[in-house]
Image (cartoon, helix red, strand yellow):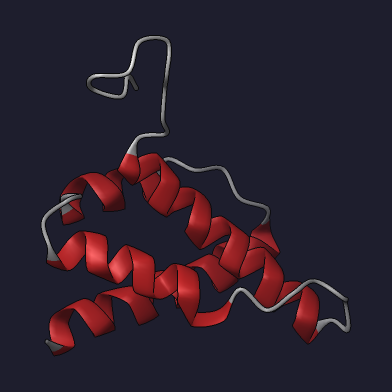
Length: 94
């Protein structure tokens, strides 16, 4: 998407970025659980998504719609669902 005021500069849509962070967090957690060496993405990405949802920078229904449209490998489906559940719990806790 274009960055306002910056010719020839483009940035990732915040909702796409959030869905990508869910996938990256899920992959990291799955890899670590299976003994892999991926860094723990942990709460940093989750906190970013929670902040975007809480401040209205991304709409929850659009975030959920784009997440649901993703084509994850079976092992990532479960882990990604856990990440989404954690995010939504944090959003609702405030």
